[in-house]
Length: 104
Image 1 (cartoon, rainbow, N blue to C red):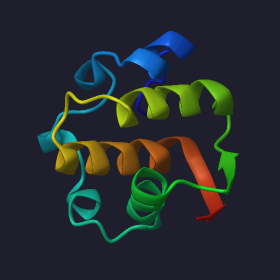
Image 2 (image 1 turned 135 degrees about the vertical axis):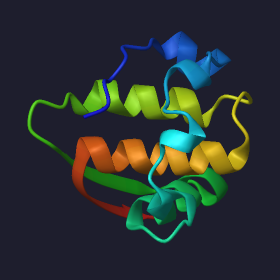
Image 3 (image 1 turned 90 degrees about the vertical axis):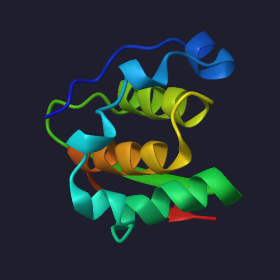
Image 4 (image 1 turned 90 degrees about the horizontal axis):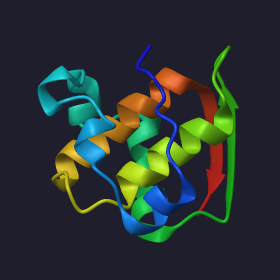
């Protein structure tokens, strides 16, 4: 499992070194690069439309709040290219959460 890095609300608000928080593009499994998973759909809806409601079921030993801060820090960064950002976040969501339900 990919490690969750503790980030602050300031990192989320003002950006951070997102490339340090995510796997390299080459290390992301192809299914996340192709954008055909529910995690890619979640990323797209969240990034482009925003979410009214998000329910995530964390995997065992995953701190949901820390994982979400980690994800939001990457999402708000200008550092990675969009394709890398989507694939990386989709992969991390799949690593840390069992399931997700959301509303745009």
